[in-house]
Length: 222
Image (cartoon, rainbow, N blue to C red; front, top):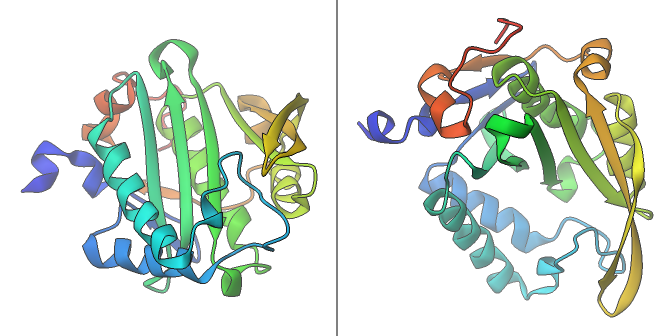
């Protein structure tokens, strides 16, 4: 079985409404279709790399290629877990959790996007809570980082709800214009005091070496 060689295919995160997992071929195609539809105001770019400016067909293809690339270049010292988010079996978005030198730093970063017709229903909060549970309860992380451009109020609101605190700013040139990114940081203590979403994890133990997290998590509640 493929999971014997790539156990991440068996990893599942579930919340009251959602399931997060690596996509199969049909689910990856559905995710690409969702990206082709567009999912943010075209006048506002939420990403440092403006990949959503691509024409719809190229945008969809870039989603597929990015998934293949991140699986192919995975190492315990540099990884990005791109999880498809499903609601009642339907693909609604993408939630990423990533890290460099996790075995030493015990720190992760998150990123995500959600199809337009699925926004405004609290799904963004629930899917972020799922990967935070994986990071803190499952992998033993000590901190999580995120960020959002000053105009991205919805992402910033999700972070505040989950307990993140301001961590300074970065400035980027995006579409030839300056943009201010508000960095955010979440400590283990603040995560524990803001846990409101029930999350369960399946299939984690054989994946731990791939995350650079060979030892059982200190909380023991994954």
